[in-house]
Image (cartoon, rainbow, N blue to C red; front, side):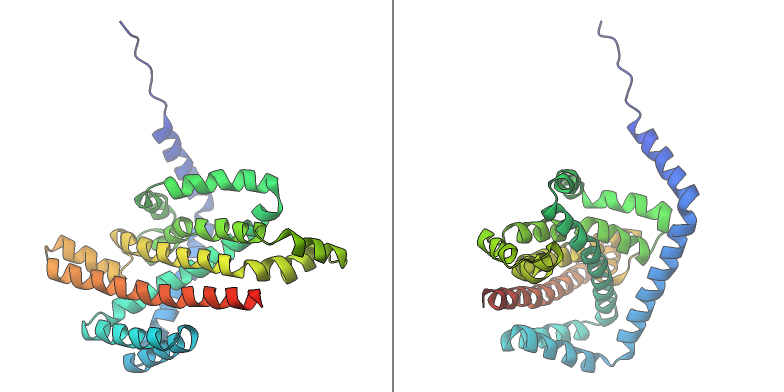
Length: 283
């Protein structure tokens, strides 16, 4: 008879750790929650204060200026369609969450990516953590966010930041490592300091790759914001979640198409920025 092996208490250990962190750092998480919530509410209120037709024209003009006439026209048509579907407020809420989450993810990811590119020791520590983060199912990130930040947009934003940061770190490190060795040697020959070499040679040359990472971060943030509707994030994901709960397939597809349109607009604009940066760095 094979003796029974006791189960490793992983779940209990995680529960104990989360309880300890919640008890000892609740003051910090509450402060962050109030700050992030205030920023989200201010941006959403500001964007909703502007007449939808005017904001649509502004965004379309930006798309035209940054990504060309075709993207500008498609942006105008897509946003007018979302307005017509009576999904303007959820679209603004989703865009705000994606914007804030992406800015925080990039602010965290860029320094870590630079450190991983310049230090092999840092890279050996960071890369396995990124593998773990990218392998973990997206739904799992919602679990620790709830006890720290409660239900709502703040928890969704925090979970989205954690989920969407890895591409920025990876592609920032990759872009810096791919800078041609002869350029590095030339910078050394002219007596450049490490700081000058980083900011005047390596980072400018790595901008196209970094922008590709930012693009992937935006796409992951958008997908996670939709999943986070399960914990009260609202926005277009909330519309999809309500449609599922109420068995309204038409409304669900309507909101899903709205998410696709928003994703396409953000993707085309950021891709064009990355290509423009590549051309500029080549010259």
